[in-house]
Length: 458
Image (cartoon, rainbow, N blue to C red; front, side, top):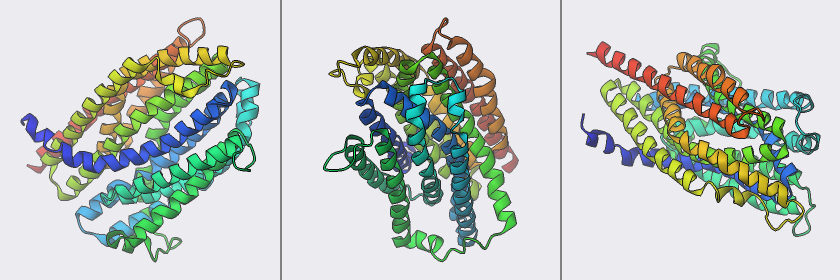
């Protein structure tokens, strides 16, 4: 095939992926705003939000990862014009997302005492616990929203989740300003104010996406008159079989980044705050790759429903090419601005915390160099993971992600991340190794499966 066979798909892929990117960036932007506002209070507060969110990220990864099972099922049913199967997949998926959201909330409440056992700075833990209580409850509306989002994505209606996320961000920013700093007569709640902002904005997000889907002719029949508790065991089993491995794939990746937060905490509050800065910045570019991953999942799911396997492979590689180009640009940006971007997160006019703030910026600037290097690996692995989900191939990719992140990446982070070796930078070298291994192995898996499908169809 010629290069133009791939590049001609860029426009449609971008049209499909851009709203998903903006929606995913919206989730990250909530964290970005929290971090910048909380960073004005001090490095201990920033580290506390980092520690609290580290538990949240693990729970979110399981819930969001599970919800991705809905998208390929809806995409396949939509391509085959099978409304009954599509509605059944959505209803059962939404039920399971609600149950999982409640379970994850309860597990987080039970996990709080672990903070004291993890040798994290006591000052940080005492600030993190009340923050986590509220943010944990926001998991329920967040995972329910993901059920609606993945359904909407499966119908190629990727704009609606974006609109809901934008509204939620506006609510979050306003509430953060009022409640963190106590403006216009509101109580000054510090980081707990940030938690209230997150919680309320997520309920708004669910209500808004439901209203949008209800008003649309294409989606109205799916989201109205749902008998949520009239369930089919076979359909539940089908979604669980798809969703559980997808949840574990996301869990293995998010958990290694969470482990990086905890390993940084062993080095002290400033390395932990610096890790949070670099992680927050690099997660924004990751959301762009995630948008392309969703586009790959939708388009591969559509082509699978049509049994057009040659086009399926061509479209997936087109998305991979676009993702690699964007990742290269992001890598250059991080490398060029690694000394400047971390300064957004701290207040250099705060004389009392000047030494701490200076150390945080110094460490974070070095971590952004590692982030610049792994941009392409991170983009490639998540795009091929999305394409494999579109093929409904989830079990082998789960094994691949476990091997890459926990048998290769984490041991390197643990060994090189010690204070007497490379410290924070060593932790991120382990992340780089894990992401690169995953990218290579997931590519090999997708290449093998699609060639097999094409040969068997001829």
